[in-house]
Image 1 (cartoon, rainbow, N blue to C red):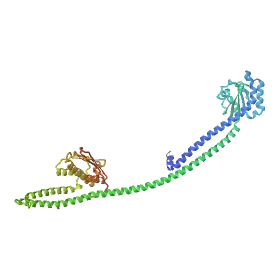
Image 2: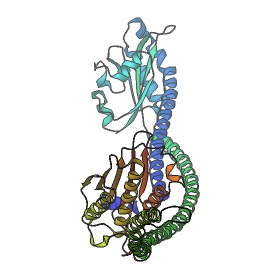
Image 3: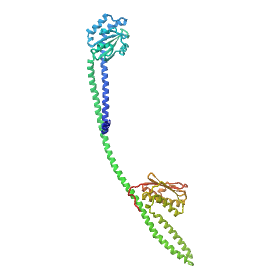
Length: 474
C-alpha cells in the first residue's frame, strides 16, 4: 500500500487523472461489455427458442388437442409423436422432448421411462402453464434430466404452452431441449463484435480525454511556472523591502539618539553660556541695587525700583533658561533600568512643577533598547508637561505595562480636555505631533483620548525588541 501511495505521489496531477480515468473507463467497458453480451445471449436464446416453439407448435399442437377434452394420449398419439421426433426435420433441432399436463405429470417423453412420472412444478413450467414461452440454458440438474445429463453438460431448455383450439386455455406444456453449440457460436461472434465496438468507443473516448487533459495540464503548468516566477520576484522585492525597512528603522532610531546628543549639547551650552552670564549679571545687579538709594532717572523714576524690575525679569529668564536646559538634556539612560527611567522622568516633573503624579508600573522587563527608553522618557515628559500646562497638574497619572513583547504607556489627567480628532495632526500641537512621530518611527502606535470636560489620556505602545545595531548610545 505504501509503495502504491509513493508511486501515485510521484505522478503529476494530469498523470494521476489519466490513470484514474483509464481504470474507470476500463471498468465501465468491462461492465458494459458484459451487459451487452448478456443481452445478446438473451436475444439469441429468445429468437432461437421462439423459432423452435413455432416449429414445434405446428407439429405438436394437432397431436395433443385431445387433451383439452380430458382424454389422455393413447398409443396412436404416442407413436405419432415418436415419428414426429424421429422421422421429421424436428428431430434435427431437438435432442429431448416432453409433454407435461398442468399438474406436473409427464404425458410423453422420448425417454419412455419418464412417461407417467409426476415431478414438482418448477418456476419455468409454472410460467408456461400461465401461457408464457420460457427459454434458458440449463445445466440439467433436475431429476427428470437424468438421461440428458449422460450425453450433455448444457442444453437450451424451452417450455412452450399448448392452448386449446379457439381458446386461451393451456391444456399442456411442451418441453424440448436443443444443443447449444450453434447458439454459443452465434453468441460468441456477436460478443466479439460488441467487444470490438465497446473497446473502440472506449479507446476513442480515452484518447480524446487524454488530449484535452494534456492540453489543460500544459496550460496549468505554464501558468504555474509563471506564477512561480512572479512569486520569486515578489519574494525578492519583499526581502529588499524588509531590508530597506530595517535600514530606515535603524536610521530613525539612530537619529533619535543623535538628536538627544544634540539636545544635550545645547543644554550644556545653555547652562554654561547664557545661564552663567545671567547669574553673574544678577550678582552684580544686587550690588548696584544696594547703592542706588537717592538715585533718580531723568523721567523722575526711582533707580532702585527700575533695577528691581530688571532683576525680576532676569531671574525669571534665568529660571526659564535653567528649565529649558534641564528639559533638553537627558540623564544617562543607558545605565538605568526601564523602571528607573520611568521613575526618573516622573520625579523630575514633580520637582520642577511641585505637583504629584500617580504611577503604576506592571510586569516591566529589566532592560529595553536605548531608543525605546529615550522615546518612553520623552513621551512621558511631554505628556506630563502638557498636563501641567493645560490641566494645572490635576489628576496626573502614569501607567506603564509590558505584554506580548511590547510596552504600553498611558499618561492621563483630569483637566478640561479638548477635541482630539484633529489635535494630533494640528501644527499648533507640535508636542503631540512630535510624540506621534517618535513612536511611529520605532514601529509603535500612538493615539489621544480626550473630550471637553472629561480630561485627556495619551496612549502609546512600542516594541520591546529591535534589530541588533539599531540606535546608538549617547
